[in-house]
Image (cartoon, rainbow over all chains, first blue to last red):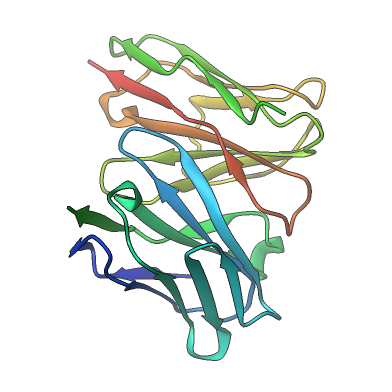
Length: 114
Length: 113
């Protein structure tokens, strides 16, 4: 069974700091990995999607990397801002079972302080 | 394109009552998914549709749960005889294809008293 782990569970940083969120998964047979942001009581916003053949994706201040062989992904946030405060979730789409669903981690709750 | 829309945003019900939620996906998306999320956890897959066909259901989806997507557009999720353990955020998502990004709605927060 695929397990997705996110470390740390919570993180508090001062504004302007660069930070890295970690995601690990046990089954490396994946189609892709997606990073999401979730604000309290709200739905998920897709940030970045990395296909299994890709090593990284970038969008603005965000950069996500994927090392499929070691079962790891990182989300790098540059020059953090208070508006980045949210829970960040990673999810993998497994090849096993037809690849029809995402398996999520439990998230990293980020707080960026002024 | 107004994104994925879910109604209602909040639902409070008494144990034993039936509830129905609606999801309107992004119009050109042929895949529609339902997920459930409890506090402090990541979303868990419930079921998905390709057009009007329901192609996979999680074992989390007991007999009290039923989902439909009759015309391949909007979808409904019904929970019969609700239990307190059904209290959760129910999230709908859609995508253009299997390998594409999922776009989520804002969810329906269900509280069963």
